[in-house]
Length: 288
Image 1 (cartoon, helix red, strand yellow):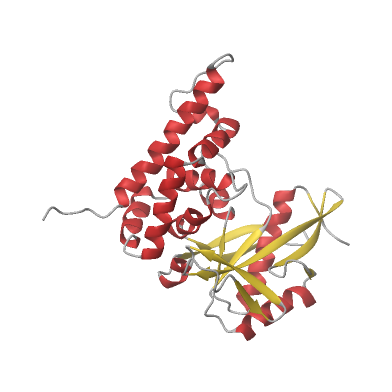
Image 2 (image 1 turned 90 degrees about the vertical axis):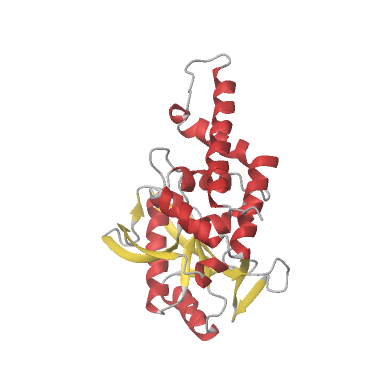
């Protein structure tokens, strides 16, 4: 009998654990990126909205045979379905509160150059999409294994060590995606990872060293532009006002002009957090 999860987030977490377990068994060099990082590690006191898919970044240098074997195992043995249109995704039908729902896994790969030469990689009948800024996850070892607990597909409790991008690796990837299309939450995720870092001193010092990497430096440059010259600060502020306005410095209670004032205060807070961090990690130019 198919287990029915109590919430979409519980079902997505079960899929995260299952996918990681399948990849771990094939000793694939991969990491989880995307919204799971701020959701699991940077969601206090300001909460994260949750995430319902699983983004897997693959090392482009991997043996194709190993990747194909791992993905075939997902499809043939574990109930995942290939997508005819989007070969970089597989789908899993799960039940939430007795309602069948479709969840998906995205396969991505590390990308160095900002051209389209390696936009798509073929892994047999599967594909992955290039994700700029993610090379540092593998070249600079910006992945960390974390023990994650949750429900298995049958509803029993389970736990597993899963490789996630570090906070710096996350910022390197999100610095390239923030501001694209309708990705409004990327700006909020970046704010959470910096403002609610597990260790801001360590993140700052580590990022300062990573600025020697042209890949990481380019990500930070784009991140700076998106927050200061485009809409990223507004996007992040909107999430803060919606989810946890009481944490905004100088928060004003009441109606009338308070919501507009709080939105502006939230934006100012976001810009201060982002710019203080970027200033701290920039190389010091010594006078000649």
